[in-house]
Structures are given as C-alpha cells and as structure tokens.
Image 1 (cartoon, rainbow, N blue to C red):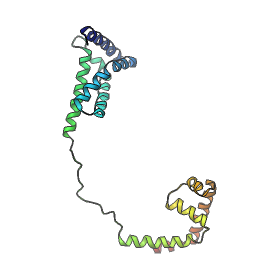
Image 2 (image 1 turned 135 degrees about the vertical axis):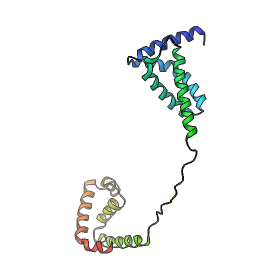
Image 3 (image 1 turned 120 degrees about the vertical axis):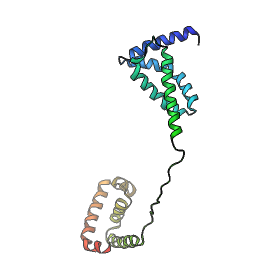
Image 4 (image 1 turned 90 degrees about the vertical axis):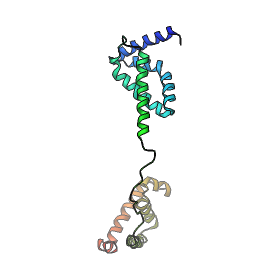
Amino acid sequence: MAQTDFTDLNDKLADCLAACSTGDKRAFKTIYELTAPKFSAILSNQLRDAESARDVMQQAYVSIWKNAGRFDPNKGNAFTWMLVIMRNRGLDRLRSLARAPETEAIEDTIVDMASRPEDIARNSNAGRLIATHLATLPSHVATSISLNVVQGMSCTEIGKALDVSPNTVKGWVRRGLRKLRDQMPVSDVAAVL
C-alpha cells in the first residue's frame, strides 16, 4: 500500500470514527468494509483459529463503536488505533485460553443410575395391573392410550399412524382413561405401589 493510499485510508477512517461517535451506523459500516479483511487476516494469524478470530474481531468492533469518541487524530492514525484494539483483544483471548484447563474435571462421585430391586418389582406389579385393565378396553383405545401416555406421542401423531382424525384419538384416550380410572380404584394402585 502506497503512503498516499495509507494516508487517504486513515483520513477516511478518522472521519468515520468521528461520525460513529455521534451514532452514525453507516460510518461504522464503512469502517468495517475498509478494515475487516485486514483485521481478519491479522487476528487469524495471531490466534491460529478462524472461529476465535471472528469472535475477537466482533468484540473489538463493538469496542471501537463504543469508544469512537476517544480517538484523537492528533495522537495517531485511525487504522493504528483500531489495530491496537484488535491486537489487545486477541492477546486477551490468548491469555484466557492459556488459563483454561485442558481437561474436564472428573466428578468425585458417580451416580448409580441402575434401578433398585424393589423399584423393579413395584414397576412390574404396576405394569401388570395396568395391562390387565387395558386389556378390557377395545384394542384401538388401548393402543391409543399406550402410545399417548407411555410413548408420549401426540394425538395428531397417533391419528396419522392409525389413519383417523386427531379428535377421534382424543376422544378414545379421554374415554379410555376415564374407564380405567373407574375400573381401577386408588386402593388397588396404592397396594401395588
């Protein structure tokens, strides 16, 4: 880049920074368009990771936007001022990565997810009781209840699977559950559980 081109760039950036300090978003867009390719290459080289470079560049541009009013053209070039912000953000990222642990912490205790024998027996007894009462219902109603309650399928999904309207499935499930509740008193269920 020739000296006159660099001077023209700095003059344009200085004008845009002054406009940004008053909230001019178009001026900020111009800054981005003029500098993003250069800063992206610099940060990618510094961080050796394209994704980190994009994150850092975004943070740095936010900082440039917020601090545009602090730029003093009498103290230096606009491009250099922004480059220092980019470079410092990159260094901050490198420092934070250096402090981050390389491995995940291992838990001191491991939770046993296996079911206890008494839970298995209780669930088995409850399953038998429910299966016995489900068998008294018409098969399409029992199937709809099983798919809805046990498998978590919606009435629309069940309707598509059984080739009926979702409202029909809702009716089957509602009436079937009501019949099960009437057939299976709470004392029967409590005895099993």
